Length: 342
Ligand code: ASP
Image (cartoon, rainbow, N blue to C red; front, side):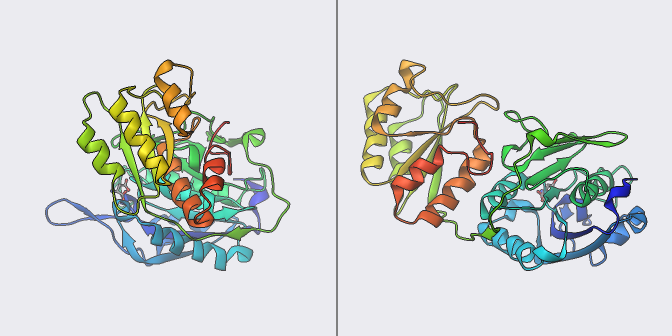
C-alpha cells in the first residue's frame, strides 16, 4: 500500500456505464444507480485515503452521452475542487475518450488528477475487471508520488492521457490505447509513474469553460464517396465546423467536384479540420500531392490528434471563441492540453 496517500481525499463521480450495470430478464445490461458505490468494492474500506462518492441525477449508458452531461460532471468537480486531492469519474467505455477529451479542454490550468475509468464487465459479475480498475484509479487520484495535473483514463494496467486515448476493443479488458503518446503510468506490483510525460503544473488559477457548439459534422472519406453525400453534409444548415477523416498522412481525392465543395464550405465560414483515419501517425499536409489542394484552400491540419479529441476540441473552440473563426483555426492546430504534437 502507498503510505504517501495518507490523509488525501478523492471524490468518485458515478455517471453510469457497464461498471454499475445489471442484467434485465433478457440479459441486456442497463444502467443502475449505485447508492453505495463503496459497498460494491469492499476492499475500499481499507484504504489510507478518504473516499466520498456522488452520482449524476441521470445514470446513463455512455452511448447517451451529450455535452450537457459533460457540464454536469464539470460542475460537480468544480464545486468540490478545493475539498479533494483528486477525482475519479466512473463512466461507460463507449464514449469515455470523448468525455475525457471534453473535460481536458473545459478545465484550464487543472492542478489535480481527474481519472476516468469503467469496466468491460459489471462489478456484480465474478470476473469483473471493474474492481481493479476502480482501486487503481483511486490510488492514482490520491497519490503523492506523482504530480498529475491532467484528465486521464485508467484501464487494465495503464494510465493514459485522456485526450490521447481511444477505445480499441469491445471485448478485451485492455480496452483502451493511446497510439500517439506513451502511457503516463503502469500498474504492476507497484504503480510506476512517468512524471516527465505528464503536463507541467500550471501557475495560473484553474478556470472551467462550459460552452460547446455542437454544430459540427464528421466527414469520413471512403473510396467511391459521392458528390451528393459530400455536398449534403457540407450543406447542413448552420454548420460551423467539419472534421474530415482523411487517408494516411491527411490525403484526400483531388477531383475537382470534391475540392470545390470544400472550398465553398470554407468560403461560407465553415472551419474544416483534417484528421487521419489511421490510429497512429499524423496529418502532414503537402507530403503528398493528394493533400496540396487541401492546404491551398485553407483546411487545417490536425497533426496526430484523435478523432475523439478533435470532435470535442472543435465544439469547445467554436463555443468559446464564438464568431472569431481565425482564432478557432489557429488553436485547432495548437496543443492546448497536450492533445497533439505540433
Ligand atoms: N455501453 C457501455 C457504456 O459505454 C459500455 C461500457 O461501459 O463498457 O456505457
